[in-house]
Amino acid sequence: MAVERTLSIIKPDAVAKNAIGEIYARFEKNGLRIVAAKMMQLSQAQAEGFYAEHKERPFFNDLVGFMTSGPVMVQALEGENAIATNRELMGATDPQKADAGTIRADFAQSVEANAVHGSDSSESAAREVAFFFEDGEICSRG
Ligand code: DAT
Ligand code: MG
Image (tube, rainbow, N blue to C red; front, side):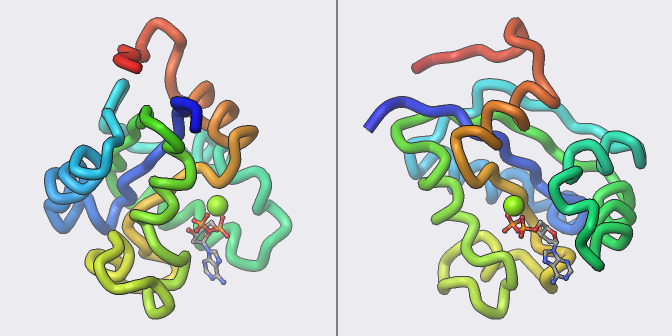
């Protein structure tokens, strides 16, 4: 399995809970290296652009409202099989359906306030990492 990069966001609910460190520890204990990171308050335009694939969904306006409701922590993660590894660590979108021990089972409140984002394919990972980081901001240790 090749070394991959993926884009992770710790969402406003988990930042508000002071859970950044606990979530970072899960990444690091599972072979994912943080190779770029920034805390941001997303603008409406940034949230709409990032989630453009969902713009026809009924929850889109609520999703954008939630993602702009407070600061987020954005990071690029690197490691073997990083995209799928991060999705496994996150758990299912709906925390009620997320496996025990996953980030969403442990930190999320609802389908909307679900603690973390993670890229779901190599195409979305490439787009999403580039959405937030210039090449020169990524400190690859692969
Ligand atoms: P994921 O974040 O697991 O990749 P997704 O890409 O299907 O899930 O949806 C993106 C986000 O949109 C998700 O994290 C929370 C929100 N969302 C998805 N389905 C929703 C729903 N039925 N009601 C409210 N928000 C929803
Ligand atoms: Mg998704």
